[in-house]
Image: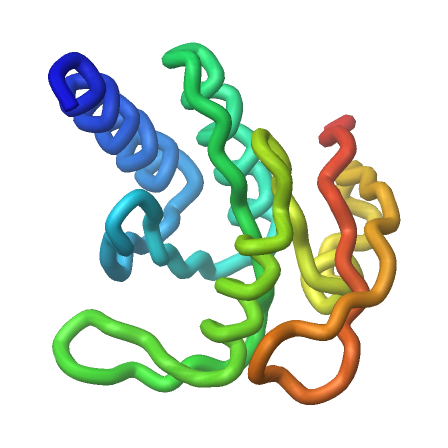
Length: 141
């Protein structure tokens, strides 16, 4: 990978700085991704946007997917449950440089100054029913 190893290390450092800034809790890395929890959906959205911007400064385009729900704490520092699966499926549908959220997340941040673009309803693999997804357009507050 040559120089890419250094870029990835810088990128990971930038992610961890943003996590500290927005009070995100790193659960684990997933190869080229991070699984993170937050205590508030607005902070999660702002953090994901900041990470996308910092990655762009390195010439990288990342994708982020957010969902909120009940999680099961397992082992020492891991989480599981349908909410984790939904978040992963939402992330997989995000485009380069995009922060994609479930309707649940969008509903929880009403009035926050976060604006969304409707991305329609989607079937998520292994998840019953359709889920409405939204792309974060801008943050005005």
